[in-house]
Length: 211
Ligand code: AP5
Image 1 (cartoon, protein in one colour):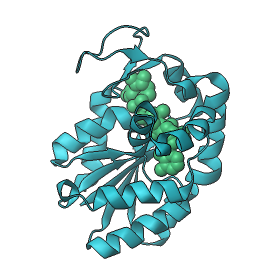
Image 2 (cartoon, helix red, strand yellow):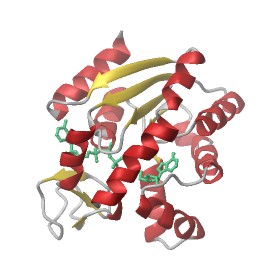
Image 3 (cartoon, rainbow, N blue to C red):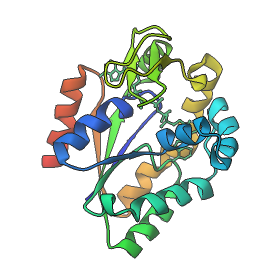
Image 4 (cartoon, helix red, strand yellow):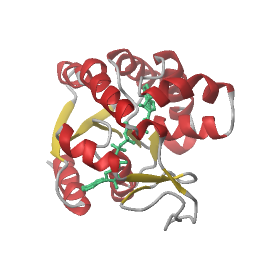
């Protein structure tokens, strides 16, 4: 069972992914987290990805498809995985479909967290994330400590106003068309209202999967 968690930057994907994955009994995979880990570790992948990410542009499809192929072939993902922000272009959707066919897997549904740009700018302006486990927080200062792992909370370089504006424009131009691609290919797309408490959003997403 592969579920795609989809939505604009700041829609709440990283907040919802561990909650949904725990409820569904599957692991998560987030390309954003994989890329930030590569940057922290100073790998060639990280060096290539950093300038794209800091500007709020997408990392090239070939890089992302390499990550997807390796990750989905791992035994821990054999029974399913929740993909958090993993597919952001039509070329990536096509590439994931090819990998799924090779592995005998299928994308069961796309959950799209729906939220307007004004709320996104408000959320991202107040966000810090744990450098270590990537947990996002609202209203916590950089330099304070993560509740989950004790890691250091930082601001992300792509949460600066220019980068946020670019990420929203990139979403409209390159990522939003992916929803139509899945509908055309017969995959269920559920639009989830992402405004409200974290718990309510989780319940809406799980409810959509159950119907
Ligand atoms: P990535 O890290 O995936 O960033 P993103 O998609 O822009 O999403 P964010 O992590 O900013 O937001 P989110 O939706 O996870 O929201 P969060 O839960 O933190 O990717 C970063 C970059 O990597 C991309 O720009 C690109 O360069 C590259 N990349 C990654 N994947 C790629 C791919 N497939 N192809 C090409 N490039 C790729 O929530 C935001 C804030 O809101 C937090 O402060 C949170 O506490 C708060 N919040 C959450 N839920 C609620 C709620 N219900 N009410 C109030 N506040 C809430």
